[in-house]
Length: 242
Length: 67
Image (tube, rainbow over all chains, first blue to last red; front, top):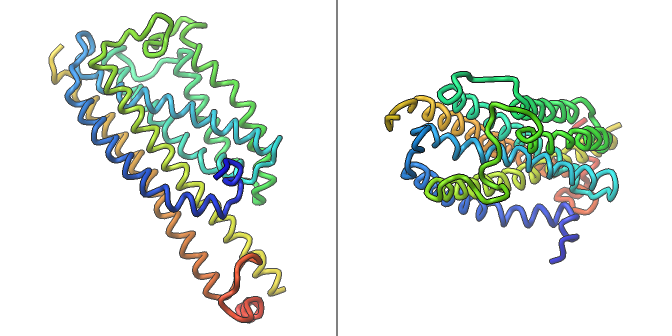
């Protein structure tokens, strides 16, 4: 099956119906393994047990940004290629990305209090992450404001493309400004600064979170396609009745 | 630093993750059931897309009667 075949919503629905149970099963297995690895991983020599918050905080931060990246591609798909599933993807992914970004902010605060002595500081990394969360809320609000999905899709696509500027700001904020938040420690030139016994559970949890994200986005896309069918049928019903 | 130091912050973080992820799963599942039920209801009343065969012989007539 060619990738372009997925452009057909009916074909996507059939594929999603088959894939979702498998994706959910693999996600559960990955989380069971990841949480087990996280719990048996040694404490950090400086941070103690609070390092275990990293196994939630870092994957949710990655996925919050990855989701906006996916929505940016979908925005291009809407504006440039007019792909039939592009705006479905963007609409389905937004609440999920918002949830992961919120989780990143909450776990970051809970990690910051024992390590920095405060839940929040207005440093560049934390502020740019908060802006990402507010952008997600803006996109969700915009989808709800405009009744016609195709008109809403164009407005959301423009906001998404503008908001993508925040992604490199989040990534490089710790390099461009003097921040309380630490610099890159996983993917960096010269290798990771994290010891392998702590790094491996982080990668397993990141995989589990990514599988969860994919499962939720595919399921939410299925819901959105069905919601649009309901809308179409109701419009047909209303026009037939008038 | 002791192994149990700040364990309440760790527990709160995992609880927050469980709540947020649980909310996402419940939301997606309930939304799916609602859409499926609504689609099935519309099809039962003979209102189908043009590309789908209608179960009812006169679907639009049924819609008019419903209205």
